[in-house]
Amino acid sequence: MKALNTSLVIVLALFGGESFRAKSADTNRISIARDAGQFVIRWDGNGILEKSDSPLGIWQIVTGAVSPYRIEASGKAAFYRVHNLFTLTVTKLGNGSGSVRSAPDGIFCGENCSALFPGGAVVTLTATASSGSRFAGWGGDASGIDPCEITIDASKNVVATFDLAPPPVGLANGDFEDGPEVGWEQAPGQLIYPASALGIQAASGQYVAYLGPIGGSHSAQIGQMVALPAAWPLYLHFAVWIDSQETCEVGLWDTMGLYVNGQPVIENSRLCWSDSTEGWKWGSADISLWAGQTVGIVFALSSPQFDPLGSQVVLDAIYLDNQP
Image (cartoon, rainbow, N blue to C red):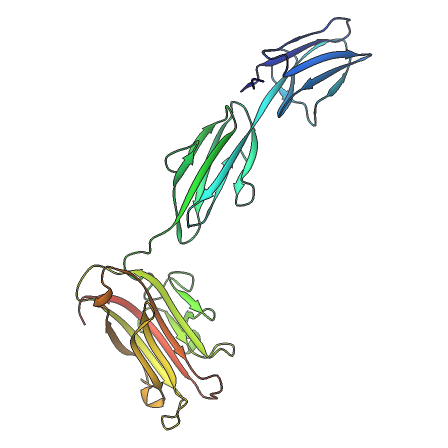
């Protein structure tokens, strides 16, 4: 059976008389019959029944109408038509994440990835990538980049691809001034605070990263994925403030380190009170081995779980440079 794309089917019912007739481009699509004092309209498939006082008048949806739909006979003519509905389906692909929303409403994918729209409608799809992802484009019955317009003349399938976004070249939020939500992965919880909350002055700006005992945890780490510039030599600079209560004579030392892709670049596994800096100290590490690569850079501090003492490390002003 041929499906009609738009509102091309009109039924004319002459209420109050004995005669009635149906005009249809597809008589299998819609029909009208007399049943005592009522008219019965039937139609096949997905569709919205609409009514008007004139073929050129304003068409209004008959709320709640389903086939078969019964109408009491009256003293005037009325025109009915079935407006086809088609399914628009969105499928998400790629290793990233995001959502797709339609205008008019119906699709929010996420949650609702398919919806019915009337034939002839123009639906605009807008893709929004999640943090750390990017929208890579449309496929299926759509193409190009966001947003896209789909003319509903049949059921359509659209593919939205989201990829993981490449990390920015260089450190993001290296001085922590954008706050705890930007750039850095932190564990076991938030590690970026205003320096004033720790009772100290920041090495630069207002924010610092605090690595120390948090909520009973004996380890803390902060890091991010970084696309390193292809420049040699390459150094990572940082300001560090160490306050350790560990005794240097007993072998219950803490461990502090800087790691690139899990490999130690700087590591002190015997951190104790003699390593305390009594204020800010500038440090640097040669990371030329990884220049031009995308790497994970992590600062970490850990201590034995049964150790009653501990160390605190505060970081600030982390940046890349070609000078040591």
